[in-house]
Image 1: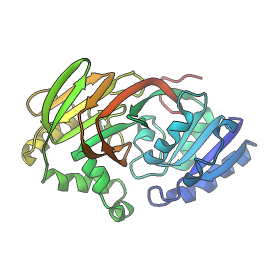
Image 2: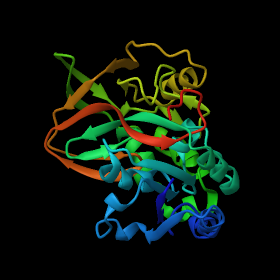
Image 3: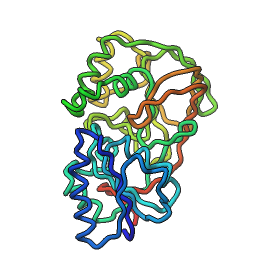
Length: 291
């Protein structure tokens, strides 16, 4: 790290980012590293060419906003997790403790991860519509401020009791299928609830593949049975759900609300998702590292 851009999202999580910022700046000063500190609302007015490293103090949504500025470059993202979910940090085995996260960054171990392109937007975790989107987009901020990530768990139970189905026409690998589903997830990282379980154990950050999960059930009891199968990795494709991998995915769409990496998005027109292999560099604590 020669020159670092520190990006702080003061509204991230329970406003932990404000507290963590002091520790990050102290770390940089102690190591005589040149840096500039900005807020998340200053991205567009910042010249990213000046920096080789971007330290992000925030959650998955904050990291998502950095991706367009660093994709397919040599710039490296360092994550100080301070959001509600911190799923990418969990996948990269970055601790939520700020001092331990800084130790990961200090080692400068780099992992090249895949990125998603959803129409003209980018992501590194997942795209979701239906039930998955309801949990992310409709959980009140006041509930997240009070309960943190557990708020999503509470919302998940509530929305599971009123699942809604919708007809989708889907294209992938030169195939076309029609399904009636309550949820569609297209993931680069499929881990949920920190890293307790995943929609697919094959789901890796740098395998060059999209992991697709389509939930078909509407009955709450059948949903919870399917949910238990996900937790205990007993899932399989059938009448209740579909699991498969692809390098491309398209949904015929007029208008729908979904999310990208936990950030609410409104989509007009068809949704096309592609993966760009190993296009984003991040400091990580996983074994498959590159310098």
